[in-house]
Length: 415
Image (cartoon, rainbow, N blue to C red):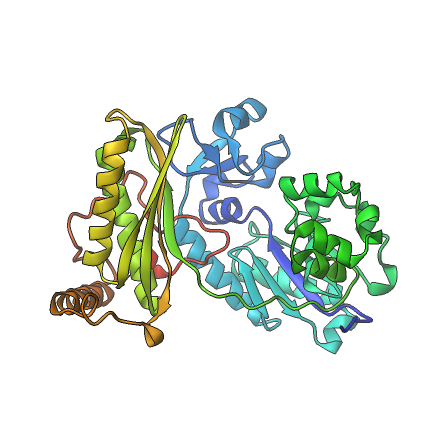
């Protein structure tokens, strides 16, 4: 396994991305503490993202609005604008790519790049060029922090040490001194549950983790991830393992006026149709549908087998069966706060196995042709002009096209 002798990776992380995009686009929000929220019709929600001005008052992402208001009474709550963030993401990528090729897009606000020899010799100059180009061509209110290190994980951790708008360089010859100052919780992939498991093994600090043997970490994690983490922390060039698509789904926190069963059912139809559209664009069929709901003091979930389909009629028929089951088990006055749908057991279109007597009947083929025609019409007009049944998005919109940190929405997600 190769261990680089110099910095080879750049990791760029935008500072308060959603909030800073709002400030750049809307001058009235500049230099003010703002919090981006799912909708403004209630205070019983959370701050999805906050500006650096709000962070100075102690406000953090995913903080309840009531708590944020206590810490920062002047905070301005701004409803989310996911399509704006998508467009800003692509505009920013274009500017960065004019300075250095982008190796991988890790999330809507994080990217990583490989360094050429000339950039390894002058990383601060490279960072300055990137930051200046963003400020000149996009705007000065969208800033980024950049880390340089031997591999992707170390570069990411370095980039978080000097935010906002900072540059941090961890040369291999200087390691592990700067790394040992970091708490375990700041390691990507180490959550509260893993912290407890590490604590049970007597590992409470980065120094203790550094000295642990890789096979021991493999045992703690229960898989090869722990061993890979050890090598990455020690500066080895660890490449991300390729992943495969396992599901398509959407979730939604319902506005207060939509928390009854009828409105929840209507929202679930939209979420399912959006997910099925994404699945068809990616070239997959589904064999199972899962519906889940969160209430104040309870949860409900159920799944339904699908005959390896991708058309809207078959997916909605499966959803109707799940709601029939849910209606028999849920009280009529149930207040549904959050719900989601997931299409599972995927089959690539190129390797779909049909059942001659069930899945390949003429009615199924007709529904697939109808769905394909609907998709073509919506694509032609770049909006939902035809849908299978009623199309009534919940207040606040963005059913299926909401903020996503890990998945970059496409324009079609907002139709």
